[in-house]
Image (spheres, one colour):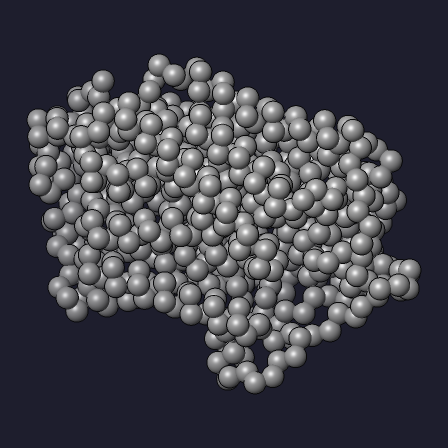
Length: 619
């Protein structure tokens, strides 16, 4: 395969991304040096506004997996990926209206603190351990993806690129904390958008206009978007993407520390919700750009597919190869696209490192050493950022073995995120679920989702369910041409044709629903939780939506939780008031010795029932 090298201007544009990203970290390290507390470092002092947080959220989850993987998916399987518009909308609505209010009003720093307040410490620790595993695996994928792109288009050493990425991310995350992560993400979101737009504009012009792109895509069956087949074994249909995609991304957004940490860094709950809804617009924009890039790429390669012809060695190299051909006579623009891919990675990896450091510090370090000084807490937090930066970078080595970056990334989120989504749903939606049900449900969900995912890795799904659309090599130079043929499926057990063939987008649904079903059953079998023992703001009274006509049925669904208390209802409307009280209770980054003096707070049970908490200040 011929490698097309960068020009000088490509290196300039690409290097500028790293310099500016690192500079933002240095800037916040200097600016915030007098505010040396773990609270300031990990959640930005809870003074962020919705604008940069919205951009940060979009940049973090629209990573290089999207920049490289989604166009390749559209090129090979068609534009049905656009149905994620539906999934993203449901995800943001559920996150902002169901999960965020509980987390924000609880005043927590780690989402897993909620699990201790609702259940107990073992549940919290189990969930934290699973989250750490999930994030390290996923981060490995998104570090590897742009390194592959850089290797493809410039001939740079693959693993040298991986470690360069990890070093830069770790550098500005360790120096500047959450504020550096958020503002760097905002800058990188702009780079991603500009990179995509250059591909869209030049690619459309090269194809003779958007009309020609759509016509050629339709002729190649790439615009057959709405397939309403309910078969769960089909890789991408309307139902697998809208339903399975909602479960998958809800596990990523709704209860993921990386998302919630940035939302609770906002100065009010209103700003946090606005950040999510504006982030939805960003998700839609990036998704549309990625899908149209895939269609333009198909229009360009419709008569000579570089993958089946052997010009490139993996589908995820399609987009960078296309860019190098498209901008062959335009120095600087290939560098802009590779910067676009790396922007997604830098933002994702930095957010992941910051989130991993937060949950480790909050859930493990502070539990073992509750009386740490602010200065020592900050240094420990920075040390954890450095440690996880090294681990996540090293994990990229394994990512090279996982195949398609999109499927690998979403499979990891499904395997771990689904059971986690089920666990938090049990706590927030079902007041009667006890800690035994929560722990048993989490274990059940993990077993089910890992069973189906690992089975699918060993026994790939039948080609009739996953084989891509036709690709042509008619006009390729007839050298090194290979035919894409279905893999032989011999000696397969019967379960491989059903359970293991399930669409990868349903892994999260399997884990979530399995967790919830097992949690409910185990709770009733072991003696359900009494609602009177649960703080009302740890539960969302969504049953009000369905039982609005009857106070009797609403009371029954509340299971004894006092959601009808006038004082509590007022507090439900005032998230910031509750947040202040909860911050005093949970001491986000502050010392705990003063907890015994908080009016209405029981240090043994970590409960608080006195509205005098509203008047407490923290500094």
